[in-house]
Length: 602
Image (cartoon, rainbow, N blue to C red; front, side, top):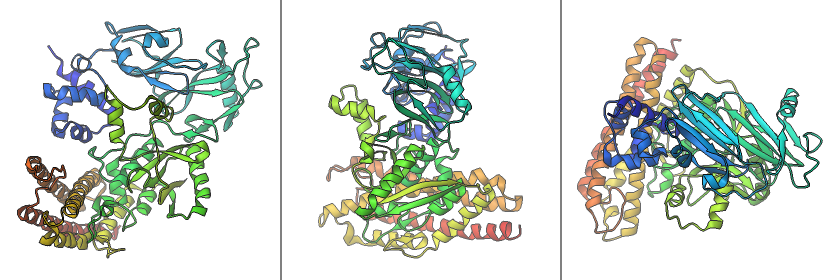
């Protein structure tokens, strides 16, 4: 008989391990968040039809979901400290009777790793006692069972082992590293003076370090006569190689994952990498971007860019305790200095936000550089198709391109020089959550009443201009101007999607902060949150119905939602926008009451 509680805990654990919220996983599986909650709370099992997609999303087998073991391998990586090959599925399948005993070498693991560096296998595993880490050197044995504890996750930084040499001959360098840590050096010179070198070796030798931090277990290998340095505020170790530097493990970005604002999504990926505790919804709420709405009469996708007409950057960076610097539309002669600034940020473990890195002008993250900064690496919202191709069993990607992709930690090269770049500055004091909430409510009011900026209407004016644009019947005659009509419909759907996402984020952020308010003001803040959620729900229901209608429409061979272009549907959306506008106006009145009642009196 299946144990619903164990299955639920396994799904919840793997979901968190992969960095999904319940909403994001539900979105990926095309089911409701309530279904995820029911599985994880042992109310029911996933439907059979959903299991393959669920197992793929959580990177595990169906058997391991439905028959949870007491020893489960969450992650296994075969590495030489430079190249990292995932072997999780293979190692997990070698678990027998809650025990694992395997020999660590490439042929057994079914991989190929051609280098003269020392190689090893690292694992992250779960038992009833918790989540732990272990490793084994090449040709050694990795032995685990349900009682194994090994190394626990560290919030701070800890070097757990060190070796100097190569795969032919090596010796422990852990005592040397412990000795050097005493001096709190910023950099480690890897040479024969600093570390014991074998008299029998004429080949290149390497310092291989195995360390733990809040992100797990890591391995890095540095060739002799090079330097290592402590990055990420002293919580990781990186190669001091001026020609190339890559920040490992910055999350993927994609639409339809519960983060429809690319600026906030890119920022969330960056601060998450930096170890900051903020969620996407909090970033949207603290910046005030969760209240935004923008429209331009020429119907352009740029109206969905969070920063196209209003400054949400200043309140956000103040809230998270950073200064910031923005470089905008640099001339070619200015690029060299900016290139050096980006490289310096990357070297110190700070990702850089930028717009227009790949495909089209949307926000992404600069994650590293190669060739002395001539080429940037990045994460963007346009990467999903590339990853989908890679993850297909019969991937047709040329081997040479795949190797370049893997050597660059799974990041893609930026195609363009960005026209807007956003740097993290110095760390500063963080305001109180109540002060940040006050600033958020002030932004709600200010952005709703903001005037037109460079052809972009905002807040109330944006609603009215959007309604007016939908009412212009001549702009939606497919027979007269098919391409432009389809463009308007695509932009219209993107705006609906942004409105749905932003108001859902607003509701989540405000609900989190209701307890901060005095009792007399909680009702008002609760009503604002409920109004925001009502707008999100109205848009969600409308788009869902239109998507179903669009799926039946084949005359124009397009997948754009809202491409069933009828006056009736546009009238229905106009009514929806008028209802949303009424709720937004009520939110402004309620926010003003809160500011006058709570903050003026205090």
